[in-house]
Length: 190
Length: 225
Image (tube, rainbow over all chains, first blue to last red; front, side, top):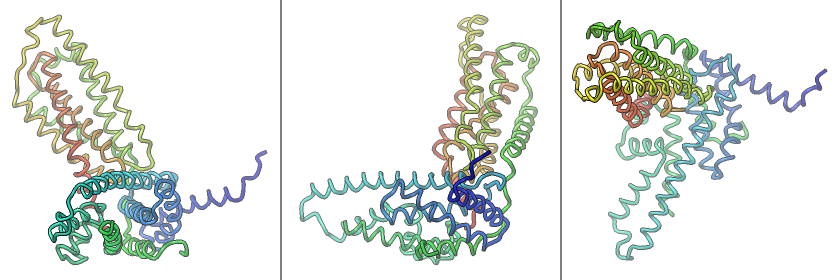
């Protein structure tokens, strides 16, 4: 005779079964089910991300990346298989990407600091330096944010044009631009 | 939605608004099998067009040649299945090891072939040569098949792009190697080894640098978010 499972474990397992049902309905085009699924899994993705990243802006960015990846490859989910491992692999990939990007970015920042310490005061703050600084800051942005800034703000394309060119939705472009501005403000004030 | 901030809330809404029904992928075993049928048929058709080796039956009777052919085929088949499984998020990355036994056997068979040539022909068996017919066969068979396979596996760009492109290319190179063995005029294993190993190495190096970006572009075009 088996001991009854703990109620929290039962509800946790039931929630994940429900994710699989919602995903299957989303694949069939049920937008309400899809929305409910994305809302339900966001805290789970956030919790996974927080184990590797501490910065709140980083966590938000990764959560969006995971949701976007899920959206792009939602046809690869097989409803006869558990949903959580499928989602967890996608989340881990995006988290690893972000950790790598942060590591590269830290190395770049260290190099910038070293350059700043060795330069003479007269070398700083010319308009050309400021332009170079802005260019470097834009180059240091994650790919989606960089595309959003370059195409929307520097080349002046419309949201629709950029959406067609990059395959990103208008919503995700707006979010990427918002994040890019925040990141640029942070980078340029350092 | 109290614990989700406004930006993510509107992001989710925009994803849900654009969500159209999607066609689920067939199981990886079925897709890999279908692709293998197509790839083998293409390579055989190209081999027949080019013309089979004049004494193929005699060559096939040689144990080291038959072993090399079998190992090359096993590597190609194993790598194809591995690529289709590895490209999916909920499948183990350990599937990538599937072609390893075939690859080990292939290397061993070529080593044994070289040794047998040394015994059979002496230093004459190690004279190098070149064949632009072979190069044409390699390009005609590997480039379209690699591109087709990577297009089928474009969703892997988001998950395991390097493993998927490497396995796909290994599969195509090994299967093309079978076609080469059936057609080319070299009688010494060293030449076969050089062409096979050279082709495979070149394709793998190309795939390592160009494959992931090819997958990303193919996925970007296909996924209208």
